[in-house]
Image (cartoon, rainbow, N blue to C red):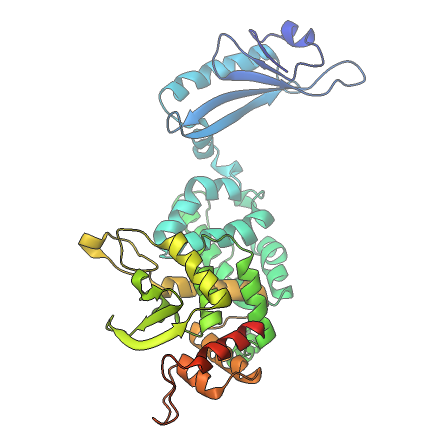
Length: 398
């Protein structure tokens, strides 16, 4: 239950237990939140000032002024009166406090006000790196004061857990990005020196990881199936997961998928195009899960302004182009790494799909057709050969 009244010590003292919040009816935005009633009958009163950053639809902020353990209602009101003109001028009080208290700034606060923008501007895949920070770095060291960060804290809380999970490549990347972030903090006078200058992965661990990568652990049929079903459980709007599932079902490369036009999906057929953008005469029969997935893709991703199944940025009349295959590939590799803990290039994954098809008994002639392998003319399958559809259905069941 909320109450609108001028906030005073007396008003707080006589509030019934049902009242959880009092909004000041004189100073807009100033309010107090009341805690549970203690054994002695008192309640903790926490004072806040509410405002928006960026206009009516901007970010909402409840700035914490203090509580009844450190101040009374009169002092809280005087502080709120000092805040009010800054808010009316469009200033962000949290940002002002952040800039004024450099020595007390926490890692998560530096990241929120400066770090995220720096990383996004510095790297082309800045948004992906921001997700890396939010998932693997900030939960571990976000609450530590920036000035108190040192190599041991980063090693114990961030790097060692990644190494224990055999995520050596990710740990290496984290070190690189953290060094850049802390270097930027030095430039902005939030740090006096680089706290993790000598932090690096042990050479023996790195060497073992390099040998493991060179062994090229292939994805088995069961692992490919796991990736497919894991991707199918994610939001349908993720283009990179849609294309990943399409690759696994059809054996077609990401580049082939990206250069597909909307009009190339005709009924139960998918017409393929060469690098020059022209139809190459090959047809993939659409049946079962492949047909359903392509139907979903046409509905989800196409638009009237583009010819492509997966439109990139730009309008048809100006610069109609397909989605960037390289960007999708990076996201796919990251997804596969999260599922199996190992990187796998898209070209190698296609070889894994090809091998898995052969392993479960799909005709080698069908596999050669799907993966564009050269065979003697008398062995090559025609586009309408029913053996292709049979082979694909066998693959779907497997």
